[in-house]
Image 1 (cartoon, rainbow, N blue to C red):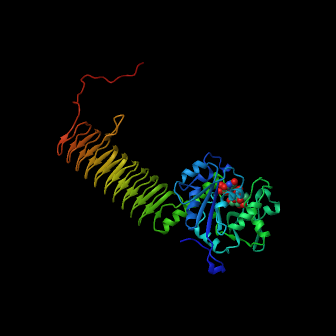
Image 2 (cartoon, rainbow, N blue to C red):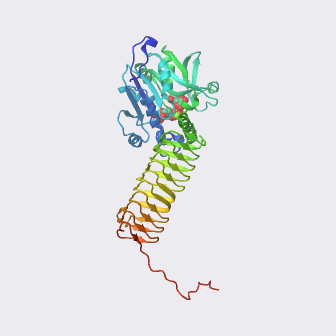
Image 3 (tube, rainbow, N blue to C red):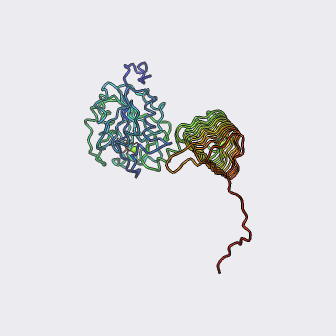
Length: 467
Ligand code: UD1
Ligand code: MG
């Protein structure tokens, strides 16, 4: 559904909405080679959060003004649907808006968002749009105990008369605690005219979008200052300290949503969700769990302390003990992993599979009820049901040039310290003696072993330390 101001409320016809996101600035204060709007927040670029919010408004048009780090910014957002406009030189927020205006329909309303204000939520923007008649201007503001660095809101009662930037503000103006969040709504046609009249005669020598506010006021257009409910939602990110603050705030928001949906956390402050985490019922997550990419946890999954889980799906009742690194893995129901296990991409466990300590599994399928409990590497392998792989077993899958497959049937018992030199096949029900290096197929239901004869050297003497 397209977002339109409700005509019933103001008795004016519906206008279309153009969202313009300013994201061209360098972000000098980040002191980073990465453009500011690509700095990660909860695992995604700052700008990605803003685009997501804009998309929830179902505007006619979402335009992103980009500039600094141009190619990198463009290639981070390959999906269509957005209008990208280059601001080759970053001469200020007003200049950035000038770049976007030529293709913005004059009859639309414009909602300005900043690429460095990532925690804003769509309901706040809807509230702002709803409260603003089509032919008026509104800025989203907030009161701060320490407003240093932000543009201050100048008011005459309920009407905003202008915005003055920190560096241009008199000491009286600097004492004003109501600041500009950067979010603004205005009629596009009027804005085009104001932008043409903006100059750079100010402390920073920049074309300030904020100067449009005083122009609107002097043209007799009503300008409202609408206050945001919380500072956190509208905070602008300019440096690494603010980035870290925003990260904690967003994490708190995400964890709270999960707790509302019934997920248990040992400590809501000690978990990080950098992507999309989906949880079933009665999931419990202990401290220092980090989730990255798309992770799904089935009903009753338990994640013990200190785990990194990335792009994985864990089936109902799966238990992940402490200190595991799990990436690109899937498990069925009732699996147990760790402590200290590494699951790499393509690790696929069926139901009730057990992967114990210091075990690495990569690109391998392990069927129901099989166990790999200690100190083992399983790579490019298919393991049947009810198999027990002994401690210290290695699938030797790499010959220095190519990878090869190991196939292990059902109900196989592999003794400890076995090397399975791929390509190799172990038949159903086979037993492999401990310490064997298996290079040929081992038949079903037989004991196969490969060991040199054990000898004891008579009269052998322990070496002694030279004087
Ligand atoms: C701006 C506002 C200030 C407000 C603050 C809120 C102006 C003049 N000032 O200041 O009133 O309190 O945000 O966080 O608008 N950008 C461009 N092109 C440019 C310059 C900036 O696209 O030439 C983009 C940046 O990428 C950023 C946004 O505009 O996303 C704001 O720019 P920034 O330099 O961070 O402005 P502030 O000094 O924070
Ligand atoms: Mg800023």
